[in-house]
Length: 217
Image (cartoon, rainbow, N blue to C red):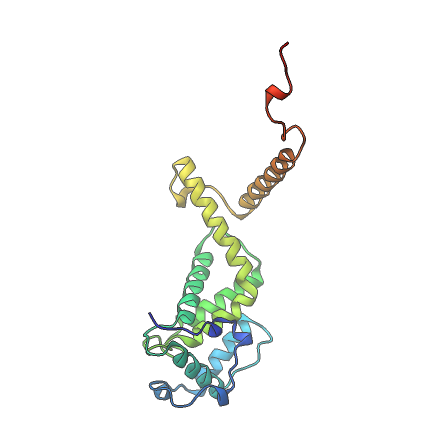
């Protein structure tokens, strides 16, 4: 298991990409190169995924790659990239799920993210050791600033739908539930839970049993 520097698992907007602090002699990273057109495509995708994001230049991308390679050390994979690949998979599943509707602007951001990942190798191909797919991981990081709560809600929806499948014996893909119904049923569950909490806090609920109320002489 590689020794990964947790400091690099912060969001992209807070990553230190200063090339002077990244190191310059990390083996393997110096062989990675990309064109100006590749960089423009990356920055265009970043602008769609997270409008207002400052464009990154090749020096900053190279600095991030060197820092990641140094953080992973002699291992073969990066937790930073792996966890963001998992988030991208969740995004892809959300977009494909007809039972889940979301605000058009959020959907457009997610579509831009997946489109970048599906349109070729990008800046750093996935087969490059340790840092392969770093550019896509950075885009995911940018997207999460806006999409995290949506993905978390979708994950809760999927868990609820799975529970309904187990309860009714109906296959998950045939459970008749959409986002609107899930929101209503979750709201009802929360209302009942609050009601039960209030009931447990009443003097009646705190009684010590019928023997303390009724006494036979």
